[in-house]
Length: 57
Image (tube, rainbow, N blue to C red; front, side, top):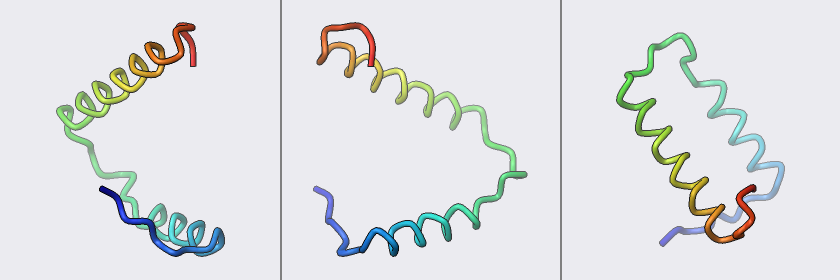
């Protein structure tokens, strides 16, 4: 169960920018993390296709 935060759109965007600025883009990403992310993305795609019945999102 997720908890909603009482943020205004400006607060939300500021928070998102602050997090993005702390990313270490020059740090290598382990291959297993990339594979897991791709597997999750593929599952989401399949679920969307199955729910719409159209074969496209």
